[in-house]
Length: 173
Picture (cartoon, rainbow, N blue to C red):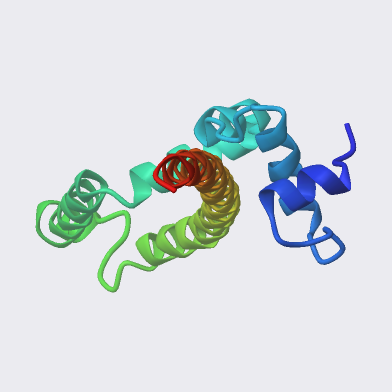
């Protein structure tokens, strides 16, 4: 439904030429008395594919204290096992070349997965900021509309008071 110039003038002091698409959409929804707020998390979950959800889960696990502590314990067990327990028959003797290979491969896989998750989080943040802007703009339009209604009511009441004062003045003449 296109916004008429009368509706624009009613809500804003503009003819609408400098309004962007977002502003027009928010104004249209304000005129139609529709909400602009949406559940961003539900929208992102609905749009997320299997790979996106997997990347988020891996980033969530890889960035936790439980992962850091358990991986630290794994490294200590690896070093102790290959240095002391299996001293002569160690499968990865000091300087732990096989462990370095495993860690390098893990880092090579984990880093891009975490970056994918961070990119999704950045997109989520941008979408959230956009929705915040839309909600704030609609709230501002509603406040302006309420101010106009109150101003009109006050002007109407002032006109009635002026009429009553004029009538009183005529009676006393």
